[in-house]
Image (cartoon, rainbow, N blue to C red):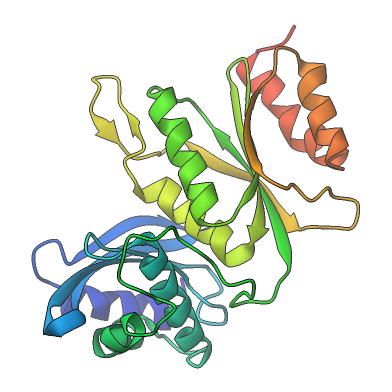
Length: 273
């Protein structure tokens, strides 16, 4: 971790020192740092709106944008997405320097103006997205591996909702003990999906208590190439045999991905003879 980033994290911990205001969710030399800030901002009719802001600082931050997730019990999903997009736009003007505190101050000062914009609305309308993206990277594809799902029905519904909200397409695939999530979409939305996946209580532990997903791994991530199929929807599919799963990958133009990553799970799980 670069020294300016270390100093920024230390300063943020000192600034957001109240109960439950600051929490580091994960640290990794390869994936960077994910942390959560609870704060408030002035919304409609001068009422304070609680905000949960999750930031993912990649290892090359601040030379690249942070990942940002916005949640609030007082805002609709569409409003949260709009706030996130505005924060990312603001972040672009702060590139190459530590920016998290500046972003928090900015949203505290500007939330009311964002919510007053006609396209944001104040009802419970279904979340809609702009066709433009903050980072014009085109489509990206990510392959995730889950170790298990105890509360499968609830877990699947949650994954489907996240994919729908973030306009991600692809597959949630089950084959024996193998659980794979293949996602395609805007890179910023893929990053937010990973934040949600790692920070939400999406499953239950062995005692039945709600828990966060701690056993997820990113197997592969790349920009969509010309040979890759564009998925039109997100679907949940179960496969009874390895060749069925392989055909799914080959049809999507991902034969090499299947050979390099999916078959590698065979030995680890000792699933296939």
